[in-house]
Length: 249
Image (cartoon, rainbow, N blue to C red; front, side, top):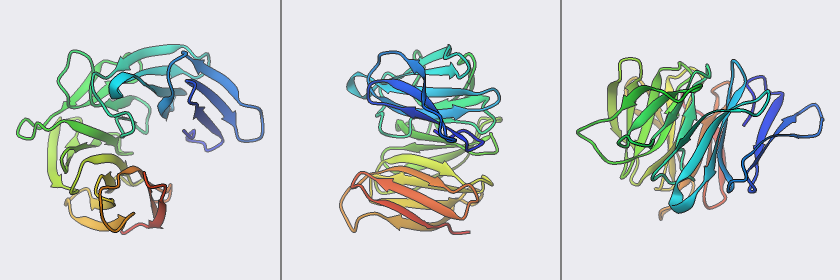
Protein backbone atom coordinates (compact mmCIF):
# COMPACT_ATOMS: atom_id res chain seq x y z
CA UNK A 1 0.00 0.00 0.00
CA UNK A 2 1.38 3.36 -1.09
CA UNK A 3 1.30 6.41 1.16
CA UNK A 4 -0.67 9.37 -0.27
CA UNK A 5 2.62 11.27 -0.65
CA UNK A 6 4.02 8.47 -2.85
CA UNK A 7 7.28 8.41 -0.87
CA UNK A 8 6.57 5.45 1.43
CA UNK A 9 5.10 2.01 1.00
CA UNK A 10 3.72 -0.64 3.32
CA UNK A 11 4.56 -4.25 2.47
CA UNK A 12 2.75 -7.31 3.83
CA UNK A 13 4.38 -10.74 3.82
CA UNK A 14 3.27 -14.37 3.75
CA UNK A 15 4.58 -14.73 7.31
CA UNK A 16 2.17 -12.09 8.62
CA UNK A 17 4.60 -9.16 8.99
CA UNK A 18 4.07 -5.59 7.84
CA UNK A 19 7.09 -3.46 6.89
CA UNK A 20 7.35 0.27 6.21
CA UNK A 21 9.66 1.16 3.34
CA UNK A 22 10.90 4.68 2.70
CA UNK A 23 11.47 4.83 -1.07
CA UNK A 24 14.48 7.13 -0.70
CA UNK A 25 16.50 3.99 -0.02
CA UNK A 26 16.35 3.33 3.70
CA UNK A 27 16.01 -0.23 4.93
CA UNK A 28 12.46 -1.43 5.64
CA UNK A 29 11.25 -1.20 9.24
CA UNK A 30 9.00 -3.79 10.86
CA UNK A 31 5.85 -1.99 12.02
CA UNK A 32 3.42 -4.84 12.85
CA UNK A 33 3.70 -8.55 13.51
CA UNK A 34 0.87 -10.53 15.03
CA UNK A 35 2.24 -13.95 14.06
CA UNK A 36 -0.82 -14.58 11.90
CA UNK A 37 -1.09 -16.20 8.50
CA UNK A 38 -0.29 -14.34 5.29
CA UNK A 39 -1.41 -10.75 4.77
CA UNK A 40 -4.29 -10.58 2.29
CA UNK A 41 -5.21 -6.86 2.48
CA UNK A 42 -3.06 -3.84 3.31
CA UNK A 43 -4.37 -0.28 2.90
CA UNK A 44 -3.06 3.12 3.98
CA UNK A 45 -5.21 5.45 6.13
CA UNK A 46 -3.94 9.05 6.18
CA UNK A 47 -4.50 11.99 8.55
CA UNK A 48 -3.01 10.77 10.86
CA UNK A 49 -1.07 7.88 9.38
CA UNK A 50 -2.63 4.51 10.14
CA UNK A 51 -3.15 1.38 8.11
CA UNK A 52 -5.60 -1.45 7.71
CA UNK A 53 -4.17 -4.96 7.62
CA UNK A 54 -6.11 -8.21 7.23
CA UNK A 55 -4.82 -11.76 7.49
CA UNK A 56 -6.01 -14.97 5.88
CA UNK A 57 -7.77 -17.19 8.35
CA UNK A 58 -9.54 -20.55 8.25
CA UNK A 59 -12.16 -21.31 5.58
CA UNK A 60 -11.67 -18.04 3.71
CA UNK A 61 -12.27 -15.84 6.75
CA UNK A 62 -10.00 -12.99 7.68
CA UNK A 63 -8.94 -11.18 10.84
CA UNK A 64 -7.98 -7.53 10.60
CA UNK A 65 -6.67 -4.54 12.53
CA UNK A 66 -6.46 -0.77 12.21
CA UNK A 67 -2.90 0.05 13.31
CA UNK A 68 -1.27 3.36 14.27
CA UNK A 69 1.85 3.70 12.14
CA UNK A 70 3.92 5.70 14.64
CA UNK A 71 4.15 2.92 17.21
CA UNK A 72 2.41 -0.12 15.70
CA UNK A 73 -0.41 -0.01 18.26
CA UNK A 74 -3.69 -1.65 17.14
CA UNK A 75 -6.60 0.78 17.49
CA UNK A 76 -9.40 -1.67 16.69
CA UNK A 77 -9.86 -5.25 15.54
CA UNK A 78 -12.37 -6.69 13.10
CA UNK A 79 -13.05 -10.08 11.55
CA UNK A 80 -15.28 -11.92 9.11
CA UNK A 81 -17.37 -15.04 9.54
CA UNK A 82 -17.40 -15.77 5.82
CA UNK A 83 -15.60 -13.81 3.16
CA UNK A 84 -13.31 -14.89 0.34
CA UNK A 85 -10.07 -13.18 1.28
CA UNK A 86 -8.78 -12.90 -2.30
CA UNK A 87 -11.72 -10.67 -3.20
CA UNK A 88 -11.79 -6.96 -2.35
CA UNK A 89 -13.45 -7.43 1.04
CA UNK A 90 -12.21 -4.16 2.57
CA UNK A 91 -11.69 -0.57 1.42
CA UNK A 92 -10.66 2.76 2.96
CA UNK A 93 -11.83 6.32 2.41
CA UNK A 94 -9.48 8.91 0.93
CA UNK A 95 -9.73 11.11 4.05
CA UNK A 96 -8.83 8.16 6.31
CA UNK A 97 -11.93 8.49 8.51
CA UNK A 98 -13.72 5.33 7.43
CA UNK A 99 -13.12 1.83 6.22
CA UNK A 100 -15.50 -0.47 4.41
CA UNK A 101 -16.19 -4.11 5.28
CA UNK A 102 -18.78 -6.68 4.28
CA UNK A 103 -19.01 -9.12 7.12
CA UNK A 104 -18.67 -8.13 10.78
CA UNK A 105 -19.56 -10.05 13.96
CA UNK A 106 -23.18 -10.01 15.18
CA UNK A 107 -24.43 -8.29 12.00
CA UNK A 108 -26.02 -9.55 8.79
CA UNK A 109 -23.86 -9.36 5.69
CA UNK A 110 -24.01 -5.97 3.98
CA UNK A 111 -21.75 -3.11 2.98
CA UNK A 112 -20.62 -1.35 6.15
CA UNK A 113 -18.74 1.89 6.69
CA UNK A 114 -16.88 1.76 10.00
CA UNK A 115 -15.04 4.40 12.00
CA UNK A 116 -11.33 3.86 11.40
CA UNK A 117 -10.40 4.60 15.04
CA UNK A 118 -12.86 2.53 17.06
CA UNK A 119 -14.67 0.39 14.48
CA UNK A 120 -18.14 1.79 15.23
CA UNK A 121 -20.72 1.59 12.42
CA UNK A 122 -21.39 4.73 10.39
CA UNK A 123 -23.55 3.22 7.65
CA UNK A 124 -25.15 -0.07 6.73
CA UNK A 125 -25.72 -0.46 2.98
CA UNK A 126 -28.09 -3.33 2.24
CA UNK A 127 -30.64 -3.81 -0.53
CA UNK A 128 -33.40 -5.86 1.11
CA UNK A 129 -34.84 -6.70 -2.32
CA UNK A 130 -31.49 -8.09 -3.44
CA UNK A 131 -30.17 -10.10 -0.49
CA UNK A 132 -27.37 -11.93 -2.32
CA UNK A 133 -24.22 -11.80 -0.26
CA UNK A 134 -21.81 -8.94 -0.98
CA UNK A 135 -18.34 -9.92 -2.22
CA UNK A 136 -16.49 -6.63 -2.78
CA UNK A 137 -16.59 -3.00 -1.70
CA UNK A 138 -15.07 0.29 -2.87
CA UNK A 139 -15.20 3.86 -1.52
CA UNK A 140 -14.92 6.79 -3.92
CA UNK A 141 -12.47 9.68 -3.34
CA UNK A 142 -15.46 11.89 -2.50
CA UNK A 143 -15.61 9.87 0.78
CA UNK A 144 -19.35 9.28 0.31
CA UNK A 145 -20.11 7.22 -2.82
CA UNK A 146 -19.75 3.50 -2.15
CA UNK A 147 -19.92 0.54 -4.53
CA UNK A 148 -20.77 -2.99 -3.41
CA UNK A 149 -20.31 -6.01 -5.67
CA UNK A 150 -22.40 -9.17 -5.37
CA UNK A 151 -22.84 -12.71 -6.55
CA UNK A 152 -24.05 -13.67 -9.01
CA UNK A 153 -23.47 -10.58 -11.16
CA UNK A 154 -24.73 -7.19 -9.89
CA UNK A 155 -23.23 -4.15 -8.20
CA UNK A 156 -24.93 -1.36 -6.29
CA UNK A 157 -23.98 2.28 -5.86
CA UNK A 158 -24.80 4.10 -2.64
CA UNK A 159 -24.89 7.53 -1.04
CA UNK A 160 -23.36 6.58 2.31
CA UNK A 161 -24.39 9.69 4.21
CA UNK A 162 -28.06 9.15 3.40
CA UNK A 163 -27.64 5.34 3.35
CA UNK A 164 -29.54 5.50 0.06
CA UNK A 165 -29.07 3.14 -2.87
CA UNK A 166 -28.56 5.15 -6.05
CA UNK A 167 -28.82 2.25 -8.50
CA UNK A 168 -28.37 -1.49 -8.95
CA UNK A 169 -26.43 -2.47 -12.09
CA UNK A 170 -26.25 -5.83 -13.84
CA UNK A 171 -22.49 -5.59 -14.14
CA UNK A 172 -21.03 -9.00 -15.04
CA UNK A 173 -21.92 -12.56 -15.97
CA UNK A 174 -20.30 -13.92 -12.81
CA UNK A 175 -19.35 -12.73 -9.31
CA UNK A 176 -18.24 -9.09 -8.91
CA UNK A 177 -14.96 -9.41 -7.03
CA UNK A 178 -13.14 -6.07 -7.13
CA UNK A 179 -13.99 -2.36 -7.51
CA UNK A 180 -12.14 0.94 -8.01
CA UNK A 181 -13.19 4.56 -8.51
CA UNK A 182 -11.62 7.24 -10.69
CA UNK A 183 -9.98 10.23 -8.92
CA UNK A 184 -13.00 12.43 -9.69
CA UNK A 185 -15.43 9.75 -8.34
CA UNK A 186 -17.41 9.88 -11.61
CA UNK A 187 -16.31 6.53 -13.04
CA UNK A 188 -16.06 3.07 -11.56
CA UNK A 189 -14.14 0.01 -12.73
CA UNK A 190 -15.37 -3.42 -11.68
CA UNK A 191 -13.76 -6.85 -12.08
CA UNK A 192 -15.63 -10.13 -12.17
CA UNK A 193 -15.38 -13.85 -12.75
CA UNK A 194 -16.33 -13.53 -16.42
CA UNK A 195 -12.89 -12.63 -17.86
CA UNK A 196 -13.69 -8.91 -17.84
CA UNK A 197 -13.17 -5.59 -16.13
CA UNK A 198 -15.79 -2.99 -16.98
CA UNK A 199 -15.88 0.79 -16.61
CA UNK A 200 -19.10 2.54 -15.58
CA UNK A 201 -20.51 6.04 -15.42
CA UNK A 202 -21.41 6.46 -11.74
CA UNK A 203 -24.23 8.94 -12.38
CA UNK A 204 -26.05 7.04 -15.12
CA UNK A 205 -24.90 3.43 -14.54
CA UNK A 206 -24.00 3.20 -18.24
CA UNK A 207 -21.09 0.98 -19.30
CA UNK A 208 -18.31 3.08 -20.85
CA UNK A 209 -15.74 0.43 -21.76
CA UNK A 210 -14.54 -3.12 -21.20
CA UNK A 211 -11.28 -5.05 -20.79
CA UNK A 212 -11.26 -8.77 -21.63
CA UNK A 213 -8.43 -10.82 -20.11
CA UNK A 214 -9.31 -14.13 -21.84
CA UNK A 215 -11.55 -14.96 -24.81
CA UNK A 216 -13.87 -17.27 -22.86
CA UNK A 217 -14.24 -19.32 -19.68
CA UNK A 218 -14.45 -18.07 -16.09
CA UNK A 219 -11.19 -16.30 -15.30
CA UNK A 220 -11.51 -13.97 -12.32
CA UNK A 221 -10.19 -10.41 -12.35
CA UNK A 222 -8.72 -9.96 -8.87
CA UNK A 223 -7.65 -6.31 -8.86
CA UNK A 224 -8.64 -3.13 -10.70
CA UNK A 225 -7.85 0.56 -10.43
CA UNK A 226 -7.45 3.97 -12.05
CA UNK A 227 -4.20 5.87 -12.39
CA UNK A 228 -3.78 8.98 -10.23
CA UNK A 229 -4.62 11.25 -13.18
CA UNK A 230 -7.62 9.14 -14.21
CA UNK A 231 -6.30 8.57 -17.74
CA UNK A 232 -5.59 4.84 -17.43
CA UNK A 233 -7.18 1.77 -15.91
CA UNK A 234 -5.56 -1.43 -14.69
CA UNK A 235 -6.92 -4.96 -14.44
CA UNK A 236 -5.01 -7.93 -13.00
CA UNK A 237 -6.42 -11.44 -13.43
CA UNK A 238 -5.85 -14.87 -11.92
CA UNK A 239 -4.38 -16.11 -15.23
CA UNK A 240 -1.34 -13.86 -14.56
CA UNK A 241 -2.43 -11.28 -17.11
CA UNK A 242 -2.16 -7.58 -16.26
CA UNK A 243 -3.77 -5.08 -18.62
CA UNK A 244 -3.20 -1.31 -18.59
CA UNK A 245 -5.51 0.56 -20.94
CA UNK A 246 -6.61 4.08 -21.73
CA UNK A 247 -9.61 4.92 -19.59
CA UNK A 248 -12.83 5.93 -21.36
CA UNK A 249 -14.07 9.41 -20.53
